[in-house]
Amino acid sequence: MPYGFLYDLSAIPRSLFKQVVEIAYEKQLYKLVSKQAKSLVKTFKVDEITGLNFTDAISLVEDLIEVQATNILQKDGFKKAQRKVLLLPHCTRKYMDKNCKAEFNPEIPTYNCQKCSPDCLINKANALGKTKGYDVYVIPGGSCMEKILRKGKYEAAVGVACGMELKLGLQVIKKLGIPGQGLFLTKNGCANTSFNLENLEKILAMQNG
Ligand code: SF4
Image (tube, rainbow, N blue to C red):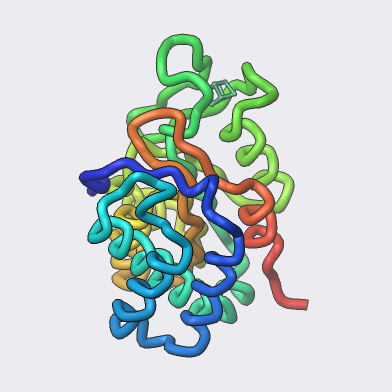
């Protein structure tokens, strides 16, 4: 289920994300961080910079904390897993029309990237994931995640999505009893969404030894 609002975090100082991780470490009980989320929104002027109303900005920061806290808690299990999958959002494709040459396979469902644009973020993330030994799917929504995980018998998953979709994904991996790592979209929406490729690379590189 997508958010009812649009956001773009690309202008937010990186120190916000650092503090989110620190709070996640300290608190672990992310459900009790609304006070801290409110404080972070005020300190970093998240509402002013993003144009979100104050309540939506708090929801966004709360979700950032929840996802980061869960990532930390599941890190060890994730590192031990062998068979991993990377789930990418189709809305980050450079083109959302016929200019995207990806072949859609409705059976899975996934878009099979044909590498038509070297500067397409999905193209880059797809190549990165495969280099790191992941099976990669470019999915039209979080609802197909469970089917993919069950069919592929994956032991761990990395998901790139907005906070709402990531939280739904967390419910799925909890149900299946496998660990996961989530990467928050830095910009959400129905098209032209974005994420940080360097941060994805750090997640994909996590393994024991
Ligand atoms: S590089 Fe892949 S995902 Fe990106 S527009 Fe081309 S076919 Fe579509």
